Amino acid sequence: MADSPRSAERLRRLHGLTDVALSHLELEQLLPALVERAEEILGVAECSIVLGKDATDDAPRSVPLLVGGEVIGALVIGSRSSPEPYDGATELAHLVADRIAAAVEHNRLYESERAARVRLEHVQAITDAALAHLEIDELLEVLLPRIRTILGADTCAVLLLDEDRQELVARAAVGIEEEVEQGVRIPLGRGFAGRVAAEGRPVILDDVDHADVLNPILREKGIKSLLGIPLVVRGDVMGVLHVGSLTPRTFTDEDTELLQFVAERVAVAIERARLHEEVVLLDQLKLNFVAIASHELRTPAASVYGVLATLAHRGDELPPATREQLIRVGYEHGERLRRLIEQLLDLSRLDSHAISVEPRPLVLHSVLTEIADAAIPADTPLEIDVASHVAVVADPLVLDRVLSNVLINAVRYGEPPIVVAAEQRDRHIRIAVEDHGPGVPEELQTRLFERFARGDAARGSGLGLAIARAYARAHGGDLVYSPGDHGARFELIVPR
Image (cartoon, rainbow, N blue to C red; front, side, top):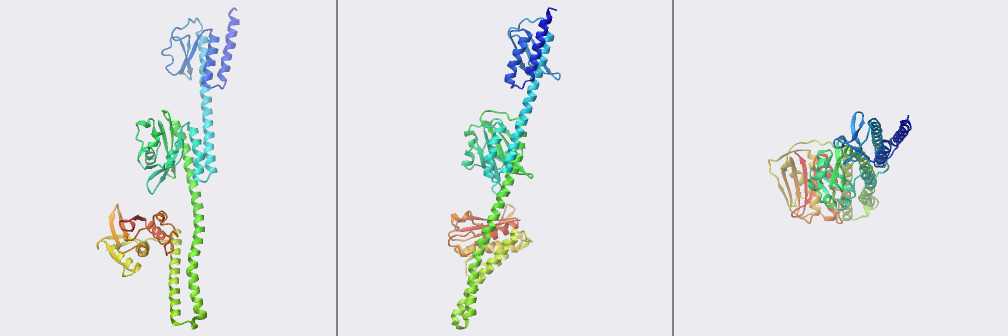
């Protein structure tokens, strides 16, 4: 009976330990509270809790903490260096250890559930932002700080793929803003981001200092570890999302899975923003096109109408020379009007993909001679540097539409002689037209193939090169400009 009050007190304290076990304390707060209660229950001056499967190996007086039959740690009674004598309370020690193990497991489950909930809230915030913003820059400005927070990272950046140059271009960044400020470009397949995009899979660099990193800013900023995920839409890589840590960090499978989950939403959001921007741009282009086309049509139409009105009302009163001059002016403006309408129809067919490309075998020298004879005056010095046996499989209409526009420009804005040359390279036939004039003004080169783009001294509609490039691309090739050794040099690329 003497032990009853003592047993009742220990049982009360054991229930108190259970209360602590069920409380939602942080692990750092929970363990000291459990140790304090364990010392009270067991009546010892010191005990400790050690977590880990091997916790009992080097503890001379310990009771294992078991969850589902597996060791997750140990309750060590007394100090490790000098265990206290402890008589006859093995069963009580095991009861205490069981409750401590339950408390630790309960805490782990709670922390895991809370972390999952927090991450789900973050991902929902990413989704909300992706749906709320339609401008790419505004979208990324909102998303990147959230992504950095979700991953507990120090830096976050998005690089988007420039398909023409096969390079990744830094578009937005937090913690490493220099990537965007300095216009960083990473060739596809090279360096960290280039590998992520080329391989289309996550890449982790645990030690940036000893890794193949092309971008020097990553080391300059002191980034130690990196995790990169490809941005994929409909199976195509459109860019790379990466996060970095300023301290060495081992990114886990859970980190990778979470960033992939986020990257899927980011990629869809960027694609949606791009489509929105394209629609806005298309609407603006349509408005500009109508306005400019109307203006371009109005001038020759007004001239033709004026000539015809004069001839209709006063033709009999005019001297023959005047009538002849008016007819010539009317014809010239009528021809200009015809060409402009034909160009506008060409653009309409190209925009609606109504052009039917029908390649067939052609002797290149003969075709180029025929196009040149029709496009430029007979007295213009011209050299066709193409062997007579060279053949190409191409649509003659496409060749005519492209090369006649380029040749007319060479006559108008360049200087003779005009040289037309061709060579086979990279599984393509490349037909170059080069003149010996001053070349295209530098300020015009970036918009040379835009519709209605003209220099100050231009006399045409500004549609010729836009149409020429559109025809070249409809044929699966391209039309490019590069300053030549002597003047302007245009190159038509035709797939072999």
